[in-house]
Length: 106
Image 1 (cartoon, rainbow, N blue to C red):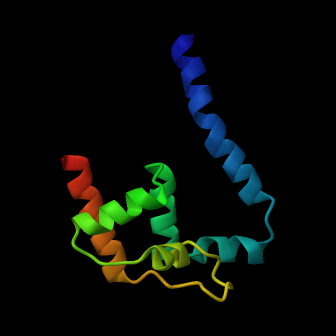
Image 2 (tube, helix red, strand yellow):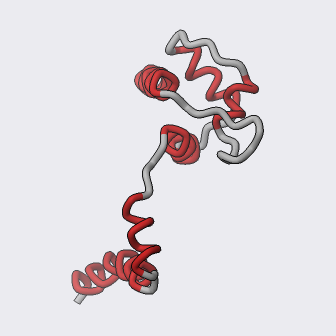
Image 3 (cartoon, rainbow, N blue to C red):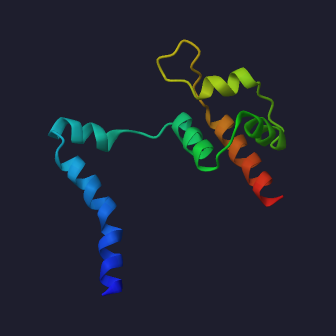
């Protein structure tokens, strides 16, 4: 019975997610499927996952020998409509991942 209880527990989150998706209108569901993960969103998710503060981000970019100022880092995490929002380019994300790899392997 224990294995069956674990299976039900593992299914709880997906079932809840599909109940939300099932309640969407067809237009909302189409928009949800087409939503893209931008570099800014990927960077934000990595920052949250690794619990990184601004000092950590500066250190990571320095390890990759990529110069970026604190205000530029802050601009990457702003909302897209904000006047100081900056799009995270491929080069910025690539250097962040390179620096993160160097930091985790050290």
